[in-house]
Image (tube, rainbow, N blue to C red; front, side, top):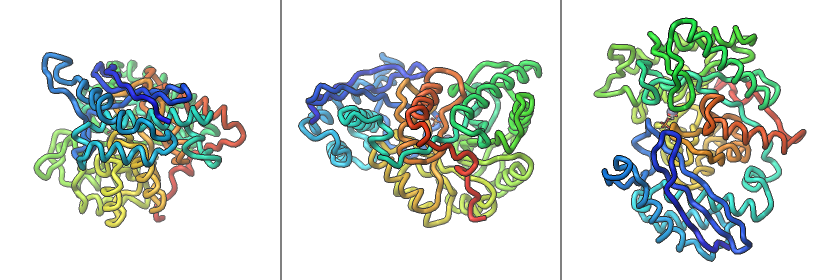
Length: 424
Ligand code: PGA
Ligand code: ZN
């Protein structure tokens, strides 16, 4: 039974406050969860409650969310069995009472939801992935390493927010991690040799002021080859364009000129024809359903099209996308929707519709590693947690190493099969 729930304000990887929740059970178990925070957030995400008091942390304090946990959410679930995750998430949603979790704050609610799951797992003496996924949780994900950062995650001129290395040809998760780290270091040398700065963006990737988005892909290709791997078969490429960030008044302001959705779609088709790109996220703006549909018809047979700001891990928006034939993959961010149960609902819905899913960190992260367990619990097969560097990014990859070890022969790394050929 849940005996007490506490919360505090801690800092995230960008130096902004975030919520940490602690749950105490009557058997003495204590577990905590910390909540991440995005920068290029989707308009339809659940509400992140911040104090707005300019005298503290420039208005970004989360004392109101902390108070919501201590005064309302915690007391509402005290005495409930911790393993009743769905009941508890329902109580949290009802206690908040709004559609977008704006009264208590999705950051407050998520912290409680995840801390409860961790405490229940601990109380059952099971690792979190096993507690949530049962005996069938066994797929170690392909890690997508964001090694070049642009957009709103870096102070450079690159429009595209993320450039991924996808080690789809590795034999195991740990090998994929090694390949990613080795290539990351070669990329560092290559950028330096070309005269670019090698400072980092928010997700641990380099943030050079490249002349074009294509140049980013060219650097990845060069780094993969120089690191001794085969481009496309060992390590493929991916992008998160985060197109909503440069969309306004019907145009995409990309590489110094305005583009229509059709022009940008043709540009992606050309990229996919010329580079081994296995995934493109948020290629178009978050509310452009018809343009997304056209994009999916053109490119969905060739590559994975991931909806992040488009779907915001929200079963209702995902259903709309599935019904329309929009995208073929769901990005999964726990704080976009705000409870564990709703997150798992979105993943289930995606998988039933033949969509893939990719678990994701946020650009503002903490040492919390819950998403590493969730991706294995759901057998989703893909995770992005930034570069293979910086502790808040690597914490998730390191947790996956532990899970890989724990699973032993029962674990499987499915590599390229995590990116099925869509409708092709
Ligand atoms: P965010 O970016 O965490 O800043 O929203 C991550 C993403 O767009 O995938
Ligand atoms: Zn994204």
